[in-house]
Image (tube, rainbow, N blue to C red; front, side):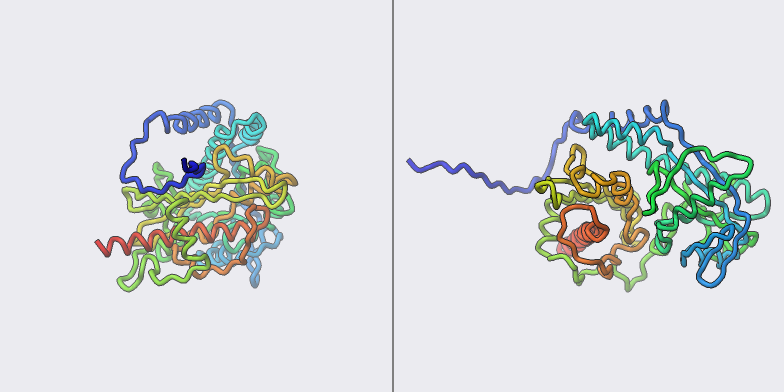
Amino acid sequence: MPAVSENIELSCTLSSLNVQPEEYVRPRELAGWAEDWFAKHGRPWIYARQAEQLEIAGDSIFIDRARFSSPRLKSTLEQAQAHSLILVAVGAGPEAEEEARRLWTDEKPDEYFFLEVYASAVVEHLTTLAGARLCDWAERRQMAVLPHYSPGYPDWDVSEQPRLLELLKRTRSESFPSCVEVFESGMLRPKKTLLAAFGLTRYTERLQKLTSLVPCERCSFGSCQYRRAPYRGDARPAGRQLEASEAAVDRNAQYQTNQKALERWAQERLTLRNEPDGSVDAVFRCDGTTCTNMGRPLSFLYRVKLGPRAQGYPIREQQCAPAAGDDGHTYMCRFIEDCDALMGAIEREKPLHGERLNAVLEWQRAPSGAGCYCEASSRDHKWGIVLETIHYALVQRELGEDAD
């Protein structure tokens, strides 16, 4: 009698699925739980004050005599002829971070993940709310507020964050509403905190001519009575319609990643979903191992939202976080040294944000074979793989549509 093989290999393509409600009801429950917890225990806050002085000299921006360097912020201020800046800080509060840390210690990774995601959404909402209040204040004084900008955004090194926080803490009649610390790396604690600068101009007519300076197109505050332009969800230059000669994705792309690997990852690790507004939601699962501690396996989920094909698939949203249930990332060297600094860097980094997806083909990044996330070069390498895999999958989809 021949021996029965103990190995199994299975390959199949499923044309349909019948996912039962009980399989996805828990994520819904956890999302509701996170919202309820925050409503009861969260202490979100906003602080803003107008700078005493603003001066632009050469390549530098001087705010209350403190020097900053951000070519993009400088260009925005100059185009709008801004005469002042409003310094803003928002935070979800330390309570959520403390609870998330407790949940992780208690081995409740799902609750930890959903509370972290909800706290991030709170920070985004607070930034929008702060902008709306500033617009209200400025409008009544025949002025206009420009889009906010923050250290860590393109063309503003995050290492200048300590200097900006020091400026913000020079309060006048109001006390700073929360304890905020900053590391030399620029990482804030609590990490669900954002520092920003809003330009202020008296030349409101310039905003009508230079639409890139109108914050309204990127502001989702629906009840605002001072809106100068409709909300478009994404008003970056990449959001314009493609010309007839432009391709949404380059079909003759030269990828840095091996094409056979892209083909396999597009099939096994990537999920694409088309939304009714033409946008595309992509989820990529990246599996690897730590470089030390006996090579512990780890898994991260990358979530990317792209604008419509007609706009060239602009990269609107990016998120990278450990997959639910993963504990391998806690064995990474940098996590053990300073978990907040590492996870904050992973959360903050959004390479090519606002650019069209084709931009990944020109992105020069250092190769890295490390499976961990300790170094910035390793994180860039993985983002490159994710964006190239999405690009490859969209090219294949277009080729398949042509064949049909």
